[in-house]
Structure formats: structure tokens, C-alpha cells
Length: 505
Image (cartoon, rainbow, N blue to C red; front, top):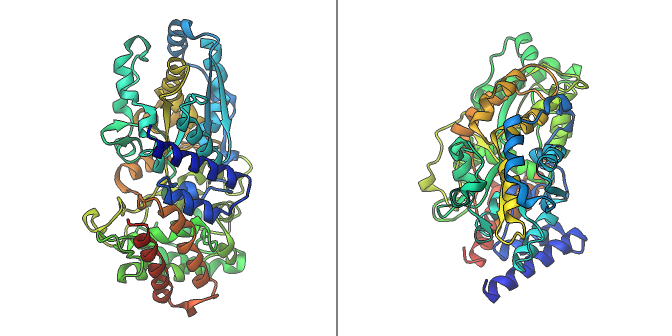
């Protein structure tokens, strides 16, 4: 590692510690780490100081957790030389990590290898991982890697595909790398032909609707933004007196959740965030159409939408205040929980399809316009681990077909493996109730066909958490711009284009 690289990672680790201690603001933190070349995906940046849209109330009980006998036998047979070793893994509270923490005792019982899963806020995950690779310390054996960190940590992790070939005596039978969803591998895990880690988590947008409400008013499930607008207007006019609106939004001023909604509107109108000339395009004709339509949607959403992030949006759905929403698939299991007021009433559907998508040849910074906003992460094996083979056994176990299924059963969230979507145990949970998986067929289709990605650039996390949602909030709440969407986005364009130019991007 060069001195320059060493110095940069020291700087990043120091920044993360300063933010954790609240010595610097979130805005300054994201700006400085972005300039250092290590950003956050916009989704993960939105989690700094916040929680993710994971509904813990959707979890099922221990009855779903039954270790596969063949797995246990293999672990006992192969783990003898590593008994007594301890491995450490640090992560933010992703759904699979939360469930995996409940299952790790089974691995220890079979192998004698102790596992410590340290769940900390995302900025601390970055600080700990960066400090570890900077000094090649091996304090952590496995890393949670936000998708935007994959390039930065690519030289610090072991390629799992290659290691599987190099260590046949430790290779889990039937691990099957071809079983991982191809869009997730290419979009999350690979960098310059190498697997930096294994896909581990994928929140993604889908349409959700109250079947009973649509049937009551004779409305078909909307498939386009225009149909969606007509449906939420009709429902609001008919049900507002009863406390129900057509939709609910995550439109909090200055929060990344608002940017997520806006991005989807831009893509659906055939627009993009950047052009191939690397200029901001959120103020062109297509993007303005999308924002103007969103301004219309605000009229048919509870007023608290303007002060709500994803948590508030979920609460509107769970409380019966909204009837049709396009947002995170992770909401769905919580809607079916035993304590839910709307248990069994929500249904999943494909995302809205608007105008023809802008081709990737006409956009910049790796942006992929599509109809379903996503944010994902991978699990990486540290090159500096002092117990790399013990950690490799755990990584294979954690990402195996059986454990991926059981993590899904524990939370109802989307698995990374194709076989998990089709596993009999997962299919059996496709019924109304806690930990439901009745939405996962739809989620799999969306991942394979509609997965969209925001720009991949160091400054993007800052733009998507500051300039864009701050100005959007001023527009939507009437604080500025006089309701003029074009004026709002011209202001954003001027600020972003200047920052991109100053950074030499």
C-alpha cells in the first residue's frame, strides 16, 4: 500500500470517528469523504444517523430455524483445525445481519469457532473497516461493504470465487456461485472482473396496494404514473373524510427518502440525473415533468408526508391512511405482522412503467435508469484476517443456500440466491402472516427486470442528501420557488454542476 493510499485511509477513518462523535456535521462528513474518493451509495448515506426501512415486527419465531443436517456434518468434518478460533464481523443493522446474529450459535456449536457480530451505525462500519485495511490489522475477518465501497476495498478482500477454487479442502459442497442473481452480482459484487464480496442485501422499490380499497372503488391496479395519479385522486376524494388518502410519500425536506421518490419520477418520465456529458439533467424537460407530477401526488397524500421519511411512510400504510404506494419491498412483512391493523390487505405489484427509459449511453457516472430504485451491499472476506480459513467457513455458511433461505424466513426480505426464492420453505410462507414471503415472487421479477441504480460518483451521496432534497423540500413546502419546479431544479443544477467541475470529475 502506498503512503498516499495509507494517508487517505487515515483521513477517512478520522472523519468517520469525528462524525460518530458528532464533532462534524453529516453534510461536512459526506462532502469530505466524497472528496477523498470514498463515498456512500445514496441509500446508505440516507441511513447515517437514521434507521433503514426494516420492519422488525415481521420476524417469525424460532420454529423456522432448523439447521440442515448435511450442513452440520460438513462443518464438523472440516472445522477441526480451527476449533477455538474467533472471528469478527462488523455491519450496520441490515435485515440478514440481524437474523444471522440469531443463528450464529449453530455455527459455533458445529465448529467450535466463536463468532462476534458487531452491529454499529454505518459511519462506524466505515471507520472500523477503513482503519483495519489501512494498518492491515486483521481486527475484522469479514466486512460489510456498501455497494459504493466495493471499488475502494477491492484490493483488501479475497475473491471468494477464486478462493473456493484454491481451497478445495475447505470448499462447501454445492455452494454454487451461479445461484446468485446475476443482476446483483454485476451491480453489487464485481469490480474489474473480480468478486469483491458476495451479495448480501437488496432493498428495492415495488408497487403495493390495498386490494379491498381498489375493489371498493372499482379501480384496477395502476401500471403507469398516469393511472396511479387518477387512482389516488379518486380514492382521496372518496375517502379523505374517513382519514384515508390515495397514497403516502416519504417527502421529508432535506432527507434522502425524498430524493428516492424524486429519482423514480425522473426515470419514469424518460429522464436521468446526469447526462453523458456529466452535466446534471434533473432540470431538463423530462425531469421537470416528473417533478410536476410528484407535486400533484402530494395533494393526494396525508399532510404528514412532507415531514416523513420511509418510517413515516410505512406508518401511513400500516395505519390505513394510504391505499397505493410505490416504495421499499422491506415494508411488506411488517404489514402482515400479527399486530398490524392492515394484516392481509396489502398486495404487491410491478413498479409503475412510464415513458421509455433513457439509455445508459446517454447518462453519466454509471447511472442505470429503470423503474425500481435499489440499494444493496455485499459481505467481503478480509485479506488481512488472522483466521482467514475459519472466516471463510463462516462466510460460506452465512451465504449458503440453506442459511440464505432461513434468513429470508426470519425476516421476509429478498434473498440473494435464485434457489432461495424457489425453496419450498420460502414458498410455504407465501401466505398472510408474520414473516410473509408472498411478495417475493414479485421482488425477484423486479430485480431481474427493473433494477435501477443511481450515479456512482464520490460526490453523489452529498448531492442526494443535501442539494437535491433540501431544495425539493423548499419547493414542496412553499418555502421557496413559488411552486415553480423548473426554477427549483435550475438552482440545483447550478450547484451540482459547479461542484462536479470543482472536483475535476
